[in-house]
Length: 345
Image 1 (cartoon, helix red, strand yellow):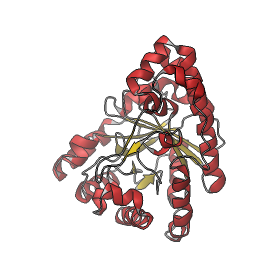
Image 2: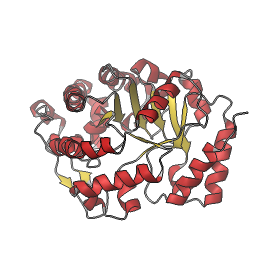
Image 3: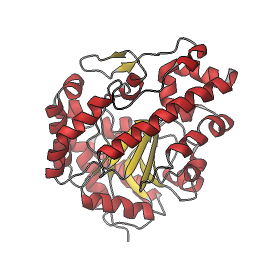
């Protein structure tokens, strides 16, 4: 993100209305490689192609904030790989991390990884180190420390069904696993922030909190996210594009001031649930409108979204979730144009 974009983000989080209205997208490996014209494998394995793809995005759409910006990642394999997960990388499909724990009995034996040396994490850091001069030459800075959330990682280490079952049948064992993961995540986020002093934000991504009830969230989600978001940064950003009505009222308590949701809820509903204390990033349907819709449909749905909001403060206009595969330059451009030209009065 540029200095101006970062200042805009902080201004929106403070509740000040910007005109033109702000726009931002989460972009990563599901969209960026194929949009750029390379395979997902090329994107993960060639640092130069990774950098060029990200530079093309910021140059093609300079008015959009890309969050976290120059995201160094290996899909869902990034953090599980540090715990020893076997990772499968098809040539042009999303990678997959295989479960590590055969049963809950093995949790006590699971070591806490060292993010400096374990799994794919050193490659994540080194890619950013190598690219940092060119990122800064382009007028941008590394702004976010990024990680999958604790329940998301637990789901990969055990399997989602197995983890959710263990939460109910063996709560203390589940807390042991989540405590280890949270300890690791604090070290991982700290390493990123120490390595890149320009970082002043945290982005955690965790969809598993959308699949549990309120009592389970309060026991197994809330305390760990509160712990992680105590970090001294200006932007505390959570992505959960699974159902969020259970967890949304707790976002302010968790310390979160920026939230990217799914499409099962409207921005107006989220404003009510969060008492308008959290800036919202959304909420055009990503697949059915932004990726699959015509230019006319994207424009119409964007106008409908804009008109539906009486209070346009604390909103960054985007799609629900990250940028999905197959979104064209044309559809992004018409979304940007429609929001940019919208008159507040």
